[in-house]
Image 1: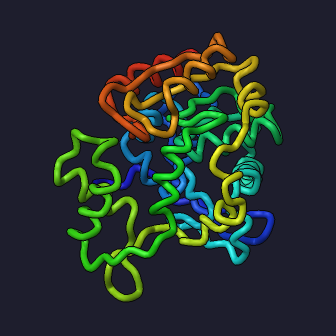
Image 2 (image 1 turned 135 degrees about the horizontal axis):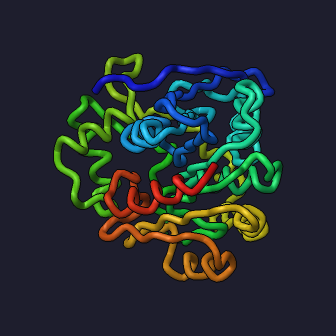
Length: 291
């Protein structure tokens, strides 16, 4: 696949070198950029289908690698692996690039980071697309993620990596082919020093969650979500079979934010990749209404 982005680096307050994919907007009237933030064990490659399409529609897209993932540095202090720090890292990127306001697109953890930003500096968020996460999350989905995230796994080759990600995600993405799973593996693993693929994130990202124990499994971010959704365009995307964003939580979010747009992606679990026709049919009209 031809690379359609520039590679960009910036520094965090504690001196880490962080990475983002920078997709230039197609020509036309300048519009607010989109900052895309991935999930817990993923990286900027998760947006490699939707980001070029958003850029083609006339918006610059910055898809970040959160610290400890992808091409961003791993943190010497694993207790910095939490949404408040991640939010400050994103603010540092915005300062570096002179971006005062942006549209935020957050998948899973990326949505939680967007809510944290709403609490820390809400004025930088012009609008938000929250993908399959809420201000509270189902303990079922969190327990599933905690069971594999940061755990050692024996992978000898790319076929093993594809089989591994398939085992973890097949329920969520039942339509994927063998080629899709191979591509998924290559987005989420990298070649390790031993010459075999390894997960493309620091296993220590789970340290704060483990330290918090049971309290970490059901965070209450309702005040953050209320602040996020109040007075700015917001779109909630939910996978129909998601085990993280339950129908009950989604309904509660919609009740709290009556003007929020909503789309449910049929047959998909946690989390939609946003290349699904139903997701795109909601995202692009939503973006077209923004400055």
